[in-house]
Image (cartoon, rainbow, N blue to C red; front, side, top):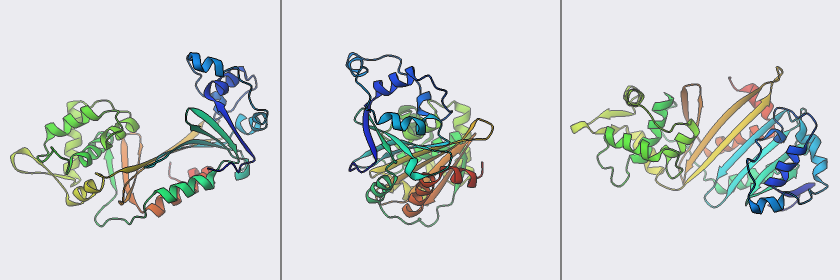
Length: 309
């Protein structure tokens, strides 16, 4: 992205960490100055920590001291990665927003935040899509939600011609905390490393009850037609988007909305989120998905207040 912002500076992570350690003023709940401190500094970073901080950074301190809202946005595109946090003042004014982006191990800090550029890149890199027929919103217990993503991995996958309960269980165990497939991606978000037998079988039964699976011959599992169609699209490269909205509430605490989007190349957007022990999975057009992200970036407070909590 071109350098068009009023303030556009680069800091190393140790530089910002050292500044945060030495900062003596009270900071708000959502301030990046409250971020976890680095436990240790490598030899390379130790030489960086003494580098002077650009004078322009002092102009950003008031905006970062006590933001009323923040939005964390991580986008894994096919050829690019966006990893940025945007901080908002109490009275939303996009000219006063500040973004902190990770770029090649450094922090790029900009005011105003380059929201238009981020959305433009997202629109360029995502594929226009429609909503497939027969895909109804799903609401599943967390374990069943994890199994649903694992199911999409295995349907039509080479070596999984016979989909069975042991194969599904093995896939969960081997995929946990790995980004190479959907089950691993879901386990990271759901913070699941393993699943006990009772929860696993309860998840299988829930998929049966929701009509996602049926029992075939010789103990095989038969997915519903719409699941097979979706799984075929997910064999292609995928775009992952995670967006976390934090809002400072009147009681001094903060509220959070976390939304996750996945789009296979040429396929529909899947929006999913989890609250307590339930996972909700929806299908969206790419235009609707980008519209939601645009609304959040434009005014996270209004979006949070409009969403059922």
